[in-house]
Length: 75
Image (cartoon, rainbow, N blue to C red; front, side, top):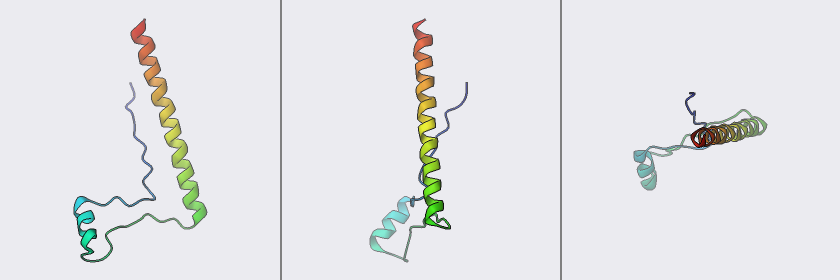
């Protein structure tokens, strides 16, 4: 059976470490957050839409897999 792949949509957000988050509270050493950038707003929107639809597809595949398990266990 195929492994479930987890698709993430965090490419437009910063994901700091614990120490980076703690350091940012005191603003030690400047900016701790590095964001992914796109060449234009249109390209960023395209990436976000593509990622959103991949998540929808993942949800549909997961639901299909769960239904198949339930049907198989009932037989």
